[in-house]
Image 1 (cartoon, one colour):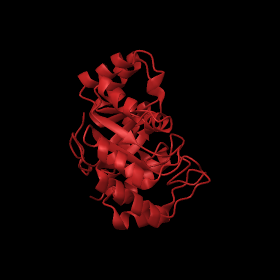
Image 2 (cartoon, one colour; image 1 turned 135 degrees about the vertical axis):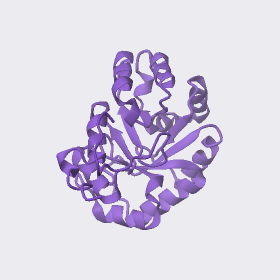
Image 3 (tube, helix red, strand yellow; image 1 turned 90 degrees about the horizontal axis):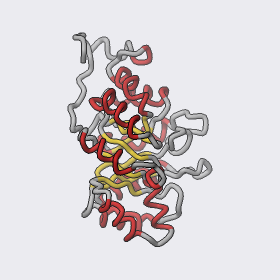
Image 4 (tube, one colour; image 1 turned 90 degrees about the vertical axis):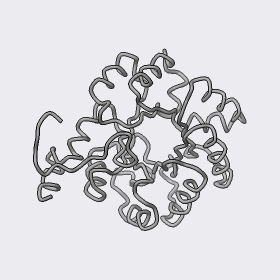
Length: 253
């Protein structure tokens, strides 16, 4: 930080196990990736190349090398896994991970119907190849999962070998753990946290109000995902009580 201030929350240091900021790259150019790294790298822990954008992004290998050179972990969105799987091309997907020297992979079932036992088998299998991040929740806003079921699914995926489990919200922030208005399903979150350690979950929170809500509930070192590249610095100020939304929250520390 450029200045010294009292009563600033202590942030965990990279590489972090909690306090993670996961950024959504929806198709940045190589130049944009370089600019993003210059500004946001100290406050970004991992980059997701959203859904299946990696399949159509020009100069993909060059961009991935930019992230590697910056020691910035990255992975392909879970929808790419689903696109291969529904076409019975799982082995081809594994070859793609090898081709691009991926160290992380996301396994999700937000767009397909996949028996959960089968999903956990894919997690177990891929965890021998890469670090697996799995995702719970549907992209269909009409599909509501009961809180007890969220807990069962998250526990099972962690047991199968997931490093972190993402709580689904999409990049729009209006499904999964949120109502269609973007409001947090507070009862759901409270119940999940009675059974699952908070550091095991990355809460997708693309909207500022959602980020503020989780920071006030869990603290500065909550794991947040689907953050837009231009919102990394603003988010870090919210984590530190340096923006109006959390200005008074940490001042009495």
